[in-house]
Length: 179
Image (cartoon, rainbow, N blue to C red):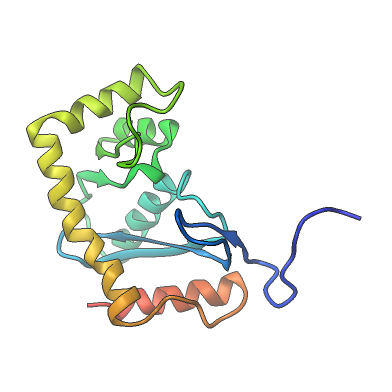
């Protein structure tokens, strides 16, 4: 008999975790937000950490912008430390984006073991400059309220649908109606 858990009411979902919270069965909702607090892409995954979601979300945003007839590409990609993925950041930088993604979380003292040199040191240097720190902090402050609005003001803390396709539709409806 295989080991593991399965949710018989929603086999697409997985146990997700948030630091300081107990694990729950569900999905990880992702969104790309402009400085003006407009959601331009919304997706769900059943993978708990945000690791590995940066490039797919940027690509989703580019697809949505193209579909809407917007030809101007975003210039800067900003994400918190949970999105750090060296290969994806290198791809985005090679594709002409400016990147502001700290390799270390705010709760960590110093670098993660083995995460030194190369892209790690480069990004730490960028974010340690006055301009890098200002850009990162100011832009984060324009993004985080969107999620606060959805969770706290609108009370959207759980999906009511079952199955990844239905949950994705529900999340995209929530994102589309967020102002």
